[in-house]
Structure formats: C-alpha cells, structure tokens
Length: 287
Image 1 (tube, one colour):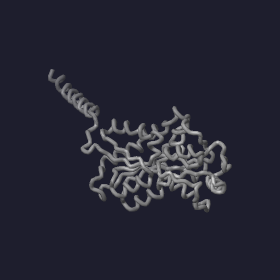
Image 2: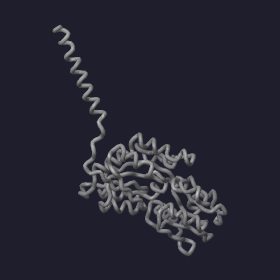
Image 3: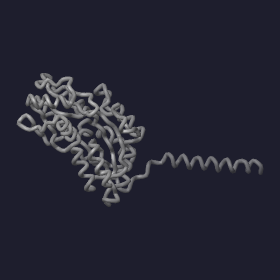
Image 4: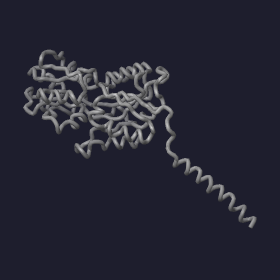
C-alpha cells in the first residue's frame, strides 16, 4: 500500500498541475486598463466596409474599443504628428516615412495593398480607355473633360498630383473640380457630373452598383496602393494608448487577420478588395 501511495502522489500532482495550466489557458484575456483606442485612417478603409468587418473582431478578441476617425491619409498622418490618435492606418508611403523618420510613430508595418484606377463615364469623352494613367490624364486635360479631384491631401489626392506632375500638367479651369471630401463622396460627385476621377479599387467596387462610372484605365505599377499601420509614439505623446496601439498593429499583421483581409469582398464582388502583405518586402509588390 505504501508503494502504491508513493506512485499515486506524483501522478496526482501531475494531474493537478496540468489542470491548473489548462484552467489558465481557458481564462478570458485580461481586460485592458485603458480600453479606448483612437484609430486615424483613410476614408477608403471605411467606404470599402473593411473597418466594419475587422474592428468588431478586434474588439471581441482584445477587449479594446476602437474609435475610428476616417479622413484623408494626410489628415490622419497630421493627427499622428500631433499625438491626437493612438494608431494610424494609411496609404501615403512618402508622407508616412516622414513621420517615421521624425519619431512621431513607431512599429511601422506593411499591411496590404490594392490599386488605384481611373474611372469615368461609359461614353468616355476624352477617349482614355486602355491608356495608362499618365496618358489618360493628358487626354482628359486636352479634352477639358470634367475631372473631380478629392483635393483633400489624402493618399489618393497625393497619387493624383503625382500623375499630373508626371504628365507635365498643372490642372486648372472649370473642367477641373475639387470635392474636398472622401473617396465615396467624390465618386458620387463624379457620377452626377459624368466626369472622371482617380479612385482606389476597393471603394469603387463597394460603390459600383449605385453608379454609372466604369474602370477606364488600370494596371500600371505606378498605381499600386499600399497601406501601412503604425503606433503613435508614447515617448513623444504621453497620453497615447501605447498598449492599445500595439494591440491593433499586432492584430492587423497577424496571420488570422491577413487571411480575413484576403477573403474580404470575394463573396460580394467576386474578387478581394485588398491583398494581404504583412511580412513581405514592399519592393516586391506589384511584380
């Protein structure tokens, strides 16, 4: 009997230890002290429906509550520069690199991409169909066909200005109109005026059933539309929710979320609205 007891005691201790470990694993994640996260992001992530798709999953998984501020990437980056947000999700790489270099943001991570497209009426008065982006802009200017610009210093507006610059054109005149609004609203204005505009593909696909505009120019490598996520630096801005910002960055680049991004839009539009890129080399995108 003594021999059996000696054998049973270590076995019971092992069972108890395994039970404690399993109990710990099954516990709900610890509630964050500061639950509120301010996310400054571009309107395309909202207009495409991506935020509505991902944020509830993040909140359920982590216990954080996200307050998204969907503006142009320029305004979102400015919010980060002033410490008025905890985390940024934007698509203006040149401007993003400036705030990375300044130390305003940290943990700068590649998330996903899609592309920009030039859309316009089926009648195509400037005859741009099939042309590359630069030639399309040249033809639109030559025809003085209505072009609606976001005019809001967003990532899309920055790309548009770069194309005009490459075309050697300073757009001006009544044919060139600036909406000063987000992508969804700009597409609607262009649709009402039967004009052209530059859009990200995701927002266009999300709006497609309600508008008459068609994709007329696409596929240039220069039209690649790259999104990054980054934390606002708590060492510069004491009020920033560092833990919350990090949790959101970690969520966006996790394998689980990247898979969700790869599938988002397929059921509704027949193709994904974004392509996941976490862990990839940015220089290899679009090849």
